[in-house]
Image (cartoon, rainbow, N blue to C red; front, side, top):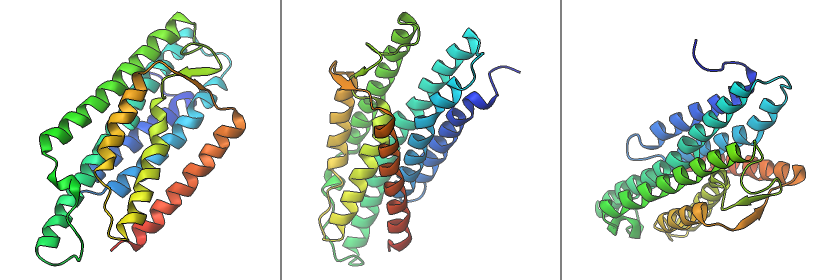
Length: 238
């Protein structure tokens, strides 16, 4: 059988399965961005620990290490490149659906600004985001090869914004968006501005210090809070 199928890659595979499920569910019907972002958070959780699980096997062969690097980046492209734009598209579809209900006087709200943005612009921004994520991940891969697995630049810093940061950025935005939405303030259009900004940060060459163990666990804690917050608001959303 082709590929590696032991415990060292199980979290990477789970991240990809989570991303695929999130893509399909978020785009179904009139759009389910909050369900999609829950799967994005799960992808972030898997990615936090997949490297540690892989390194726990001390006798990995060079082929196993190279395979791990490749599938990690391929999975990250789907999870943190494609899934966020699908969540954005789900938000767009959801706002269009709400706009129809507003016209029918079923919702006492103002139409979303996002609905006025041409679909071509939405598609272009989404494609640009995925391209930026692809370029960053490919550059990371060749740099890993050049530095014998040490990663971009050095062991203490990233250069540019890691694609995995989307697992905290976009859930945070959607939580803020929901709080404001309850006050009849719809900031959905900001999601696409955020996509552009994050995409540019993916490929800009600036230093970010890699988080230590304490910071990693803190980010996991924040992600867990966001996950349960999204679950709760989804449960009580009308």
